[in-house]
Length: 161
Image 1 (spheres, rainbow, N blue to C red):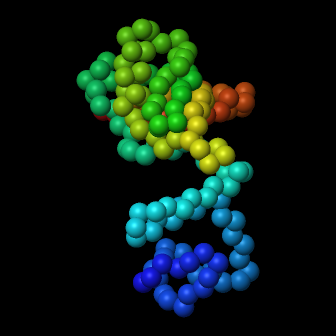
Image 2 (spheres, rainbow, N blue to C red; image 1 turned 90 degrees about the vertical axis):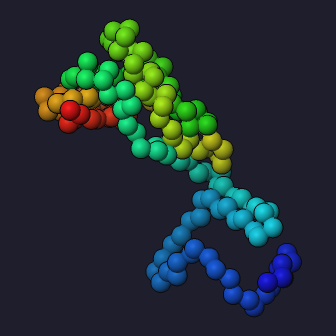
Image 3 (spheres, rainbow, N blue to C red; image 1 turned 135 degrees about the vertical axis):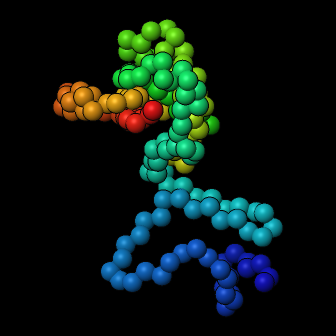
């Protein structure tokens, strides 16, 4: 298929990943990335587009022996996900130094798709709670924390053994 010049039309078919929608339908396109056969790209991101950071890989505990040493444990703090998707703990509430070092190492292994604002990846910080082991009694704590207005992700491994 020959390239289609700007502001012209063509009557050729091509494959796409769009779905046909039936009325009544409303679509607001927030971001578009087109890659052409020659490698050229067209991108558009709405100035209002905001996307939260999300895990891009499975979040697992790699040092399971050390994890068993801390069972059960509940820790809260503040974490950061940078514009490249790297995770680090900024603060931990009442954690001994060796637990803090272990958690910082574990979190650093996780990879996220970074948050996006104004069409660009950004660094974000937010509170978190980390539960490891049998946490059935901790759900009461979770509910109390939520009622106080705290929010953020809860990272839970209830049946770690």
